[in-house]
Length: 640
Image (cartoon, rainbow, N blue to C red; front, side):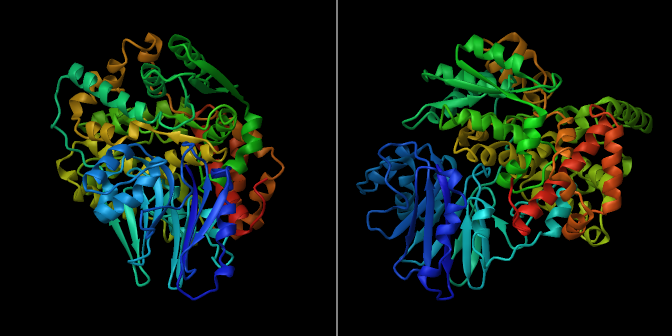
């Protein structure tokens, strides 16, 4: 694991003027064990890495093939490297590996870019073929590990984080209004970022770059092959258990201990139980303890850790701690956010980094196994009376619920359902949420942002992609799963709640629910294994029925959120008046300043634990984080 950066300059600039050293230094937190830069023979191509190694015998990066014609810098883990090494040896090539990522140049030499689809793991890498003068930028199937690039007629630069690209003083710094507009209604289109001319390598894709052009080549995409698995829940639970335990076991590789993040919910508890079953020694689990008991799940986590017999560390996180570290966590994730829960993960990772170099996490389970509450909603009532009753019920729930912050209680309108059904053949949650958010936020925006504020246009683009992978044959549940996997998971959860806040403290997250084999199993499941008796991840609960406390098995899904009241502490921070000032608001150019003044005043009156109070605070957090990004990356002020 490490941070990577690089460039290919076509302008003939002298090697000594390359910004590569500054680029890799800017992400030194991803690899504190040393940095190195490599140039090709003419100095036009540079590859760099900041090292965080899990194999004591690992060779320095860039790793290369035996002929030293293919060079790779990789951020991540390849769990089937020994299997792939056997494949290469069968082809008559004798290779020796000091670490997992060293398999990549040999696999490429044997199979070309087609070999990338064989990789099993969490990775982002750059591969340069000096003989073909071709560069590949490759990202894992779900975007667990990040990779960004900036492409112009004079060259391409790339890095694990956007700040590595901005370390080149020649790269212009501007916000991308079109991308920000889509984020405002809850959508991040794959490949887009908040910054103009900075793109993200899409999950499951590789970019092929020559000195003439750049070509995007997808090598994998989730497809719901429903109906190809058993309908018997007991049989499926047994099959899942074996596949999942192997996914956990292979993620224990390396020469250093691996810990776990434990929330007390079924996902992280299943991960920890599988680690124990694997025979892993000296397991350490880490849990956040919020001061607001409504959002604190540490008692359930204590119960799980006690039953499994693992060393357990509780990490107290106060609202003041969230305020003190909020801007720093935004500097690491480089996106606007709606809650300070990622800041809590930042603090959890800081505590865990004193004990381990890697942790297992439970991300991906809800998207794959229909775990979020919206998977069970009844939004398409068959008649007008039912629709009216459902709308009244939603309003009542909304008034008293703090969960509106997550967007899980969007109010339905017949008009929205009709629009979405025309696009998707159903009314998926992502679409309902986007239209709901758009109605709330549109009136706060400046006119120049409203011109690119088009949720229907974005949803039509997404609908086209869904139809391309067989959307017309999918049930609403599987449309929801596909959209969650492709849009919510990589854009937000695997960033602010995973890699970026973990690697801020040089700690690697490993995600067994997003293992190739686990995903292949989940994509075969029909509604009978996800809804009804199996709703709420019943399949996973059944698989672990004999190994986890009954309290954990019976526990309903709770979203991981920091207390909304944390915003009150953030608003008292000395830097907030500046970020919400008219000067900064006008400079960013997204919101009307007078309406932000009203929003801030209203948030002081409406209780934090109400639905309206949570929504106001979520929007204020978004504004503060967006303005913070502008301040830190466009105006180049310190993250504090």
